[in-house]
Image (cartoon, rainbow, N blue to C red; front, top):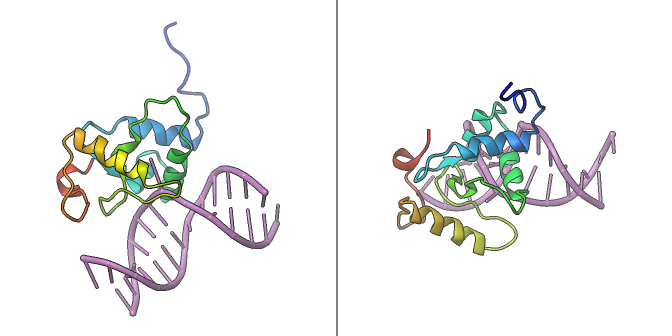
Length: 111
DNA sequence: CTAGTGACTGTTT
DNA sequence: AAAACAGCCACTA
């Protein structure tokens, strides 16, 4: 046999969110609510944020591509530094922020 | 078990 | 357009 695992193994909601975030293309952004919906857990937007806050040190999750439904970087407890890092990472991928610090979701939104 | 908290969102002011 | 409210649900104490 080649592979016969991971599919049947029970996945926590956190891992399901991470899997969805990994599918966001470079240079695009999506909202917490969309991640929750694509993970099969509509209405769990807050939990997506909670899951991303709990990311382990080592991961391959492009968390910076997740913004709120208004297209802006969500403020979080813990410091403003991360918010600026997130914006810098996105701009590095070609995402444009307008003068109000928001991304045009009709242009960069995914899907 | 209850209560407080939070990287959210949709509706109403 | 921005702010206030209410609904939402997993985690922690």
